[in-house]
Length: 344
Image 1 (cartoon, helix red, strand yellow):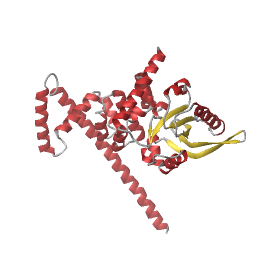
Image 2 (cartoon, rainbow, N blue to C red; image 1 turned 180 degrees about the vertical axis):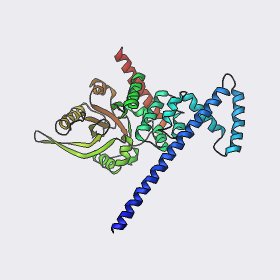
Image 3 (cartoon, rainbow, N blue to C red; image 1 turned 90 degrees about the vertical axis):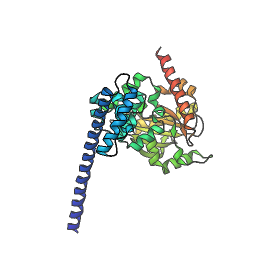
Image 4 (tube, rainbow, N blue to C red; image 1 turned 135 degrees about the horizontal axis):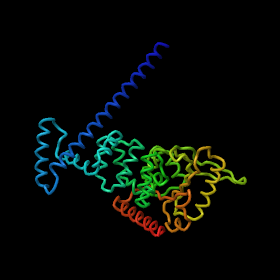
């Protein structure tokens, strides 16, 4: 038995070494390939596409694609060469590409370079690096309009840039980069009529997908967390801990629209958690009230944006994505207008 245990341990150790070596080799190859594509794109852009030479450039790229395909086989289509050019247009600084190619694979970079808005593109770059997203996960997050649903999108461009720079340079993440509105909970499979208990039970059944929607740094702590105040019991629907924010997150699930009384209830939860549950080195707890509808005026008048209480809609059925996009862009516009008026 001892010999077999030794052999098994040796096998697992060597297996781990092989897997790590393969991973390192794949990363090195990816970095070299990405650098190659950038240099090819720069040569084409500077020597073929400079000035008013669009038609000539098309002809040269077409011919170049055929020559490279004959010499090296598949992988050098006209489309691929235009990807190379696009990367240079988006990232003209070689130092930026040098850092990026060591952290993201080429397929992810290819997805990112076609995001036109620079701040939005930077957001996805930093989220991709922080969460180690695969290309598939990155595309899913883009398709779900994660940036537009994240609270940071409602801030001014300067604030967005500052928060992303803090994350990039120091690894410090702001609350606005964590919380979203609305949350897409269509994967819960709820019928038209459901209760708060049904919603809670469905979330726990699909906890992994729920955490993916919320963000990978959320760790589940408790369901129906009982707290006692003056011999009276209250229950926090869901309690999480966020590793990067270093704080407890209390989630209250509501079926209807947001009501003013919800704020007082959440404040009680947060003060109790701060007094009895918060550990040394942690930040004050945050409350998230999930409603099936909310009033922007209520939230503005109660100044919840200045508190540790967040309010967000949740959707158990996805609307048409064009309608959702229009709604989100209107919401972002209103929030930024309020911010600009406040600063004036």
